[in-house]
Image (cartoon, rainbow, N blue to C red):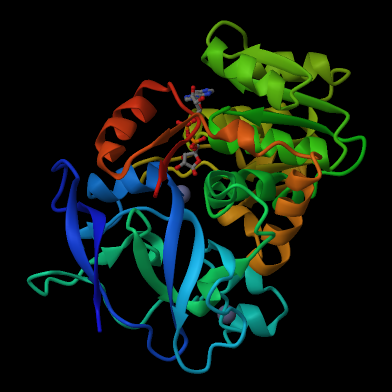
Length: 362
Ligand code: APR
Ligand code: ZN
Ligand code: ZN
């Protein structure tokens, strides 16, 4: 029997979100129903609401979540009722061309639940990133549930499900930051700060944080930045070169998603260095670079989708490091809010006041 729970819906383009009763079906084969304990508010949720992702309204928002598995469908063996899990949007298929080549973090056929959650009148909902976790319970593919140490706080664990993993992974997986490297991170919101945490974890010797907002630079320092540059007042390319013996950083992580910051990243790296684009551009944006510079400077220009993470490999490891006090993921939780406060949280995000607001469930 489908269950009735409360969830946050984006009804139409740019319309305010609202709390509605939704119907969550019992899990079918390969599916699981998860009781959500915490779910962070991410830019992607706002993009869905603004119609920036697609037009499949109404959306059930929320995707940075942790909770407890309530029931599982036939054939589910990796998780069981009672397991504490982080939800992921990369349940790899194991069969596509990327998976078969041993690169499952590029999986082109990731799994989501087959059944749809609905409004009480039967209207089908589109869950954000195939998750939909601003809801007391949600239905996902079992592979979207990653078991982690249940001693971790749900508000902290949930953030690994998206933005924080994207940033840490941009440094440790995509950028392959290594011991002694110099790293620059352009844009120090939640994603950029997570890239700083990842760079420090990987042993970077110098971590230069770049932002246009001094408040963000202060936070970046507490996350592990060794130097900060306000690019509103200082040329960041010059500053990064100066801080790296005149050469540029080994790895530059662009966590804004704009052509001008990408260009800064491109020129702020050392010869044969690496640029990682983890900020998400909009469709209208164009990049123009002298092709000779692309050739002549060598190195690698990479993008990082979801931090090139493998949830089953990366989530438990990062939660363990957090529990041991070796990384501080709690620093990303700015405030804990209720299910009815998502619209307000979008406004605060827009003002740049918060790293993450996290919806808590009783
Ligand atoms: N130069 C430097 N920093 C900038 C610039 C700029 N031109 N423009 C904005 N910023 C800074 C902001 O001041 C802010 O600190 O970039 C940061 C962006 O942070 P958030 O808005 O909190 O976004 P975040 O959640 O970190 O995501 C960053 O990654 O996943 C994507 O869609 C996401 O594109 C977004 C990016
Ligand atoms: Zn695959
Ligand atoms: Zn997200």
